[in-house]
Length: 197
Ligand code: SAH
Ligand code: MG
Image 1: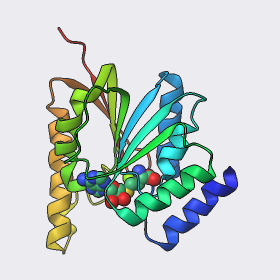
Image 2: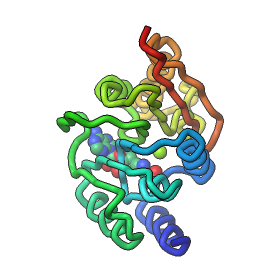
Image 3: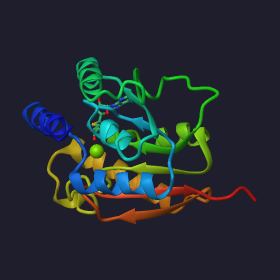
């Protein structure tokens, strides 16, 4: 299994696929174990790297994951098969903002797709959390750019970083969720749904 993980890391490196940092996935795997998470919805599969590692956190956690890029989706299916995890990981080839979920809910949602759309993903998918559920978001530091917008030359990058900063404010001001920020990897947040009053 270790070998397959290394192969995925090599592939990601060669093909510029932005897979999660090691410290961050270690944090998430520990979280899944410690909190008895049984079901995860991931937004942004890429090649299945984080989905496979999340599924390996415990013997019984199941992962549903969404990817809109066909090449990456195909690669993810291949990797999941190689790791013998087809019974615990389901991949949907779809745009997460267009997908219709119904009648399902999850203990944990992992947001790791288009950085400019984080608030949209959060607002759409918060309804699919089980009681006490949690939303984890990756890349809140965005390689050190967040909080340092004035040093960025590219207009597009500046705009994207601005959106991540807006998302951080959105989480801080959110009354429905209690969010903690972690300086792990590229920056993670853990947002726990408050108990309904
Ligand atoms: N979670 C992966 C990395 C995901 S990279 C890992 O750590 O291994 C982000 C992925 O999100 C990209 O592959 C991109 O194609 C996908 N993506 C971006 N916006 C999306 C959307 N709206 N719906 C589905 N997938 C999306
Ligand atoms: Mg990421």
